[in-house]
Image (cartoon, rainbow, N blue to C red; front, side, top):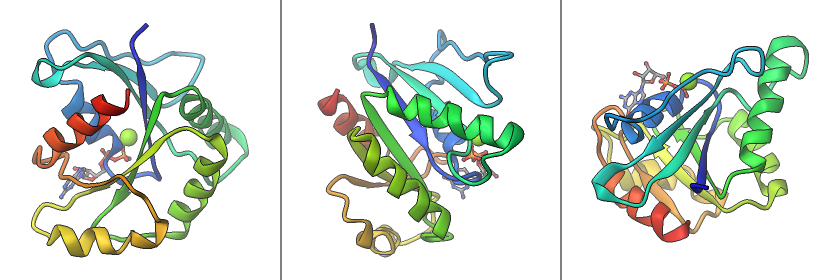
Length: 163
Ligand code: GDP
Ligand code: MG
């Protein structure tokens, strides 16, 4: 079985953009699971001739616990809970939000290894962007731009070293 990496974060931070950037290889398999979940997509990352691993793009992990949103949140937590590594994606433009704090609090309980991925750093000073999240205390932090494919090689190298 291939190792599993889960992308977790609040809506609109760029999880799906990162997912597409990581899984864009020709034979990447992307599919919904109708009836099971609203927003949970799997693909295979085979970038840079590296060892392949499965990536799961989760929906919103925190927020409402009722109805469809609640079901999505539960699916996201399940995906993160079974992952070999979680990439906690945040928005380098907007900075840390209380929803990020909530997600992080939950992630700490899963006891899965977590890297902090500060996305949307294109056009930003990456040290400033990372400093905004320094209070989270992560050892592994990456400034990336999923949309412009910046910082992905460094991220990929560290992900592979962890799997
Ligand atoms: P998700 O809800 O976390 O899956 O976020 P999406 O991947 O759907 O992206 C939300 C918005 O952020 C979209 O408008 C993207 O084009 C934009 N976005 C994603 N990644 C980047 C990035 O690296 N830089 C910039 N400037 N915008 C981005
Ligand atoms: Mg998405």
